[in-house]
Structure formats: structure tokens, C-alpha cells
Length: 583
Image (cartoon, rainbow, N blue to C red; front, side, top):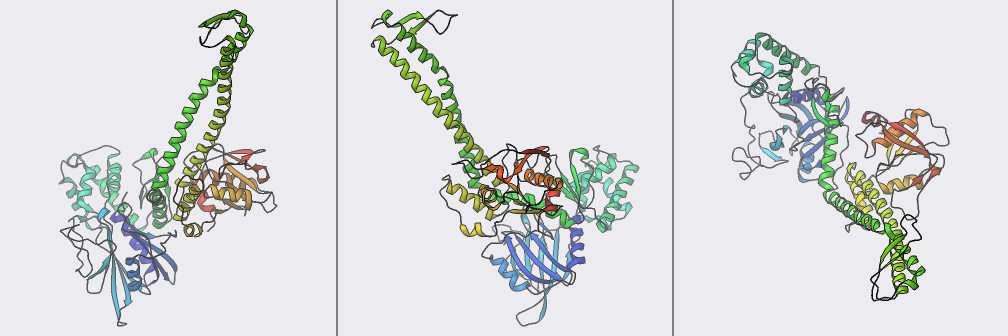
């Protein structure tokens, strides 16, 4: 869902409480349409993320550290010039609309104190981040809007800044009870949720549906059908909304596959048991959690499209090859019949003449059918016909052995490609994508070699710390899996992997100590979470001492065999994994 005006007002108040008079220490631009302001005040330091992305426009504090490009974009350089060292003096919201103005006190080129404003417009595809000087003139914007884009409002350097077009909706916080009820009744034939959306600014469709759910308990009514009791419930809910603005209860809703779907600054009840809910202490933590997963998937989709296509093509090719080889193998199943015919012909050479097209002979292999009819080549002698059947038997026998080996090899390769695909779906930054690209290049699956600088840019193992104080390491891709398991682990360490499911190698660093059951359970949860079974429940995870893990000769990266293992059944839990992650 999009960030609504009411939720934005909660965020603005949060920024005021934490960062008024905070100084801008650093400006970065991790993505084309996002900036991060590092702010420091007497209360501490915060990172303010501002995004103008069409599908994720927002404004909130973040604990994440987005990966920045090596060369800062021009807009980033401009903000560094005008905002670095400045103080945040004001946070203004345009009514309950999705427009926020951050006022900064800075020194101009003459060392005079002036106010410059960063205008954050959160309006879907029209979202923007605009820097305006003390005279109200646009310095620049993260998205320039010229006559080709809009005939209504230009956003260009040197142009006077004007407010976005207003929708002439009322502010829910300013209306009285009588006015509120009168507004709704006047909408007559409109469904209640649509009427609320058209009347008041700052309300999202989700909040309007929650109004209707509270008053109508799942029914659908037009405004003229509402009775006085239902109107009273609507007004009471409006008062509750005002209370939540001052004392929010940030709530995130997941579908049953644990994918984040909706969020709000107050509890949402309309979905009943069809959605899972999770409460957060702050609106910032909620938005970080909601958007981080979605942004990660979007980044992977954008920057790894060619890899995904390559892996799908490779997988399809191997699958087709395996199907053809399996069909050929089935054709070899009757090889013994040819050997049998050869033996019977040799035993009855005296009874066959050259030129015969068939021979009906005693079958000493099958007592239930004493005679068998054997086709013959009229051009060949009886002995040559027998030899022909022997040659066909040897061909099928050799083909069967080769096909069995090729099928086994193909199945192993398909498992490897699935493991690479799993690593790709969990890749969270460019360094991980570059490492996967390099792995495929070294395996001769692609021609384009990865940029080594991207791989070296902080690509370490995932590191966790168990509640008992044990370090738990987890590989990010197959190359790292091999390195972790075969080189960096010690003899007494404990190794984990999902059973028959692609996933990362996970190792508990024991340092010679006995590992408590709680740590073993947490390591199994981490292994399950960092696997293809992340969204599943009751996942089987095998674990054994590292000395029991071996790599077969010629095996693909990440492919190992192991014995003397135990199996734990766990459910991947993002909250547990996040708490254990070493910062």
C-alpha cells in the first residue's frame, strides 16, 4: 500500500521529536530516486530515508545501510553542497496531504544564515524530492518535470516552486461531529468507504475500509442507508484515529505466506484470520521492515534479470535433455531380449538356412512359451544374424550405462542450478549479485565476467550470535558455502543444511566447546531461513560435525555429501533471525 497522509503526520511528529536542531553530517543517494540524510543531534544520530520511488515513496528513519554507488549522482552532490552542516529547523506537513517540507538553516555563499527547504512530495508516480531556496525558487529536483511531462506544473531549476494541485478535501482532524455526520449523509448513493475517501484528505483506502468494517461489521451499505447508531460508531472511530495519531500502535500485516501486504499506525481488524499481524514499537521500524523486503526483491529483479533468464533457460535445457535421455533409457530396457535371440540362434544354427526371413525355435529361456519367433535378415547367414543380435545387445548395454551416468550428472547439475537460483532470490546487494555472476562465469554458463571490485566490497559471511554466545556463520552463495565448509571451519564445528532443499551452508563455531541445544535450534532456524524453504513451516534441517562433510571429486560449487547426521524440524522465523544477526 502507499503511505497515507495520517501515517505521514505520525512520521513528521517523530522527526520533530528526534531531530529538530540536528545537523546534517552526510548526504548519500543509494538509488536513483532515494536519498539518505545522516543527522546528528544531542539525542544521538539518525538516518532519514527519503524516497520518491513510484512504488515506495516514503519518509522515515532507517536502521539499514543502503549500498551507495561508487560515484555520487549529481543531485546527491547538489544536496551535499547546500545541506551539509545545516540544521533541521522545521518539519511542516501540508494539511493531511502527502507533502512534507523540511526546513534547514544553512550558510549561503556569503556566510549569511538562510533557510532552504527540501520538499518531499509523496504522490505515487508523481512523487518527488525538490530543493527550494529561501526565495522559493527551485534549485533542483530528483525528478525534473518539463512541458513534455506535464502542462500543469513545471519542476525545473530556476522556476518558482508551486504547491501540488489540491484535491479540496476536508481535514478529518478539523471537522465537528455534526459536520462529519452531515458530510457522510450527503453522499447518498455512494458506498461508505468510497465516500470517506472522497471527503477527507489523508485517508487511504485501507483506513476507509477499516472505518466501514468497524461500523458495519463486514456489511456493505450506501451512505443513505446508515442509521444513527452506525453514524455514532463512525464518529467514535474517527475519535480513535485522532488518539492513535498521538499514541500510535504501528501494525504490519502479512499474508499466510509471510509476505508483507499492508501497514498502518493503528491495529487493522478487517482481514480477520486471513492475515497475520505484527506490532512494532515505532513507525520507523515498521516501514523499514515493510519496504526492505520489497525493495530487496525489486533490486534483485532489476539488476539480475539477465541472470534469472539465463538460469531459467539452463534449467529448461537440462530438463528437456533429462526427458530425452530418460526416453532413450527406457528403450534400452529390452536389451536382454537381443542377447537371448542371439543365444537361441547359435544353439540352432543347423535348423536355419540363409535366406530365411524368420525362425521359429525352442526358447530354452522360457518354459511357459516353448517356442519363439525370431525375425532374420535374409541377406545374412544364421551366424551373422546371431552376431547382429549380439551387437544390438552390446549397443543397448553400453547406452544404458552411459545414459544412467548422464542422467545422474544432469540431475546433479539441475540441483546446482536450483541452488544458484535460490542464492539469487536471496541476494540483497550488488556485491552478492556480482559473486553469483562470477560463479556462473567460472562454471562457463555465461560469458560476462563479474566486476571483482563489487565482489570485494564487503562480501562477508552472514554472521549471527546465538543466545548462548556462539558465533554462527552462513554462506551467501555456493562459492562461499564451499569456502566456509571446506576451508574456514574447524574440525569440531557443527554444520547445518536443509534436507534435500537448496540453501546456504550454516556453521556453528564451537571453539572446542560443547554446543547447547538452544544454539543448535537457533542455527537450524537460521539455516532454514537462508534457504528455499524460507516461507515454509516444519522444515527438516540436517546437522553434523564438520569432519563428516566431504566434497566429491568434480562436484559443482556448494555440493557436498555428509553422514552421521541428526535432523531437526524447525520453522523459519524472521524475527528470531533478525534478533540473532550480529550488527
